[in-house]
Length: 627
Image (cartoon, rainbow, N blue to C red; front, side):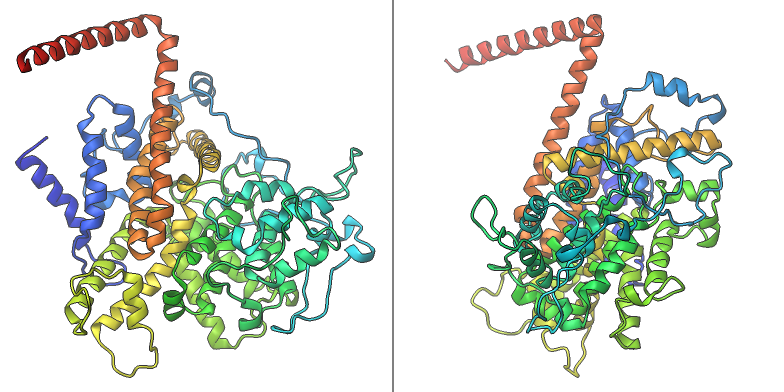
């Protein structure tokens, strides 16, 4: 559509930037976000024949807070009108008729005690929600030099170099490969493969032999990745030392070496008085709190988000980042990433509210799961579950603990997917305000006065002197933007799977849909409305991913690219390739469908031949006219 209709509709779209944000300020519409989203919106809307794409895009927007657009994104009938009589819906029949989603099987995980969160009020609990026992570390028969690897205290920090018992239980080959994977440089790569770490964490000496022993099998990717990041560089030194004389990989490199390090490593243990053994004990408790049987929201996802957040922090230019954030800021947000989904029941907030579960009642239908995750994690750190062996904050004063708690709560609550678009709008508006006001207030002579400075550069200039008595509106906005960006990075890491390389892209997409469809079946059984993206009869694999990438992922990382230029250089090209991949996958599935209906396929082929002949005739006529 063209003309006045499109102008009115676009004006309606632009209005989302003027809404009052959660920080209490009115924001101007952001040209960046409207340009990104409107382009995708026009492409989907103009393609009237592709109803699958329109309905799946509507579901994506509904899931991520798209209702703020006042009905602009309304390609298909409203969700209310699509509510079906669930009593007539036979999930067994649907399962037989719907295309099967093949999900890679999750290897048998270490036993994990599921937190008693009270989220399941249904009379019929699913078999996948049974409780399991905790990992019995003592039963692994550590002895001799493998009981605990300790060296002389590190001279720079005064801490002993520590290896968790799970590391010492690994085979030498597994330790060599993990030492290389968990080196500082590899941990800072965007294409880091968390699945390899998860597989290697199982290769213990007890179960590496052909003989099967009746012992608990360890499965601890979150423990290893969290230890490698939060305890660097001591963790890398411990890994290298645990290899003894076998400290070289096939390439002749020292796998655990911390040199050369990437841009600016942080030393939490030395700077913040963090004990490595305490951190590992806490990570072990957190990992056992995840439900390993969840297809998506499990301990592998937590490990992946923690590493991705670390990578995003490393994408900042060190000269600027050191002036904006402190080591304390980085540690607290990374610690929050480890337990941001602890105890996740495999359902979303809409399910909890519609089913009126104990959690929904407890948290008043307000960011139900995120509130629970934060509460459970802080219970381990500060509440009734706190113990000396995993008290990460034991060397901190009350002021530091209170500040850390504030940062972690805000960061975890910001991962609520239903607030995605409002959060993006707030951040985009702040970025624009800081850039505009900085250029207006900048009176210094520059070689290129019209050069547009990045927010990262601006923040580093304004916040470099934190003790400055003089306050001004620009400095307040810069402080606000720095705080909003820090918590937004955790949200960006939480939804980063579609922005990863193809192997991880497909793996996580299939697992997310499997968890969504499982929830949809449960909603049918309970007689409550089916949540968006959870109906296996209507959701198309490729269309759902295309909509998610175009409307959620790409605009998010395009905005981050304005703040962190390396994101624009390294991540955006991957996102574009992934959009093309799912587009080709959609075409491939369409061809498969045509082969199953020969009559339709022959008709479409004849139509395509006729169109080609007409185009050939038209080209010949144009050539004759030109001649």
